[in-house]
Image 1 (cartoon, rainbow, N blue to C red):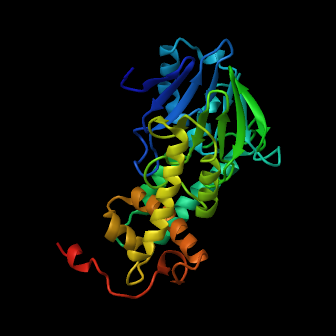
Image 2 (image 1 turned 180 degrees about the horizontal axis):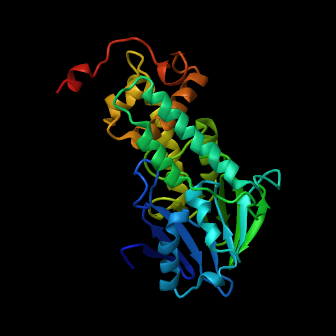
Image 3 (image 1 turned 90 degrees about the horizontal axis):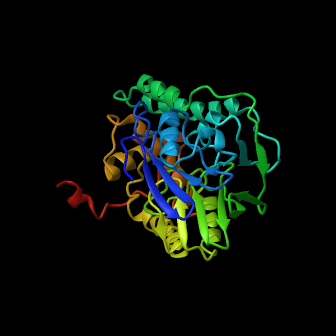
Amino acid sequence: MPDADFDLHSISEGITRIELPAPVAIGEGLATPVNIYLIDDPSPALINAGHPAHSDNLLGALRACGVTPAQIERIIATSWQIDVIGGATHFPRADLFVLSPDMKTPRDYEMWVDTRRQIWRRLAQEIASFDEGFEPAAVDDAVERFFPRMTRNLRFAPLRNGQFIQAGPLHLEVLATAGPGPGHMALYEADEQLLFCGDFAMSGLPDRLTDAQSYLISLERLAELPSKLALPNRGRTFEQGRWTVSRAANFLNNFLSNAPAVLVRAPTVMEFIERDRGVTADEPLKLMRGCLLFRALFDELVRTRTIAAEGQGLTRRYGVDVDDPREKLRRH
């Protein structure tokens, strides 16, 4: 069911995937479309709540499904990312459940969000220090919109790995999967063989990744589950869930195996992104997201001694100083 502000996709009886567009006021490199899953039941529940800027979109989608915000009894957020959990503030009567291994933090969600703001701000200043065409002021404005001020007293019910939580008729197992970021989890429903795989990318390179080793280990763990459907936070629903997750793990493993072939003449992360990805300072948010992703991937290659590296930060060079076998092709 298409709409200007949302798309509705029926997954099965009682489960609807609500696809919300990226908030238009936020730059493309930060904001992306997100999925929220409505479990329609006498006690309706949401898996994820979107970005705070998604309020009108999400409430409109719920109305189209015949559900009012006041009816939502619980929200289960698969990560602490602001475009996954931030919209929960629009449902003050709903119980919020998130992964919290120590069972009590981070209550001060604004402090958590501010650490993310600072990551982007520091990276913007670092890039601007040796790229005159980069405008950190524009980045700072986008960061302020993507990471608005949040509550310092977040009320939530903590979950741990291996626990089970009910969402309507679904009996969901909590799977702590830290690869996409701290506090990330997947949810598995064994009877229906549904895998809510959170921020894991089911096709292509990850959208978010803080630790490549944890990401791969978590993917391989999820690939052991006999899932029929893979339901990610971004992108379409995938049938043959187990095969899809295995393919995602194989894709990332293959990328890491083949990456040394293109890390010739020991590029920095920025040089690699500009040369092989075609992203420049004219697209500052995309450039920054690429820096965060590929730095994590290349550091994993260094950790496994697949490649060498020299230097620190964005001046760090990865690979070896050898001839580029594709140099002639790049000239055309």
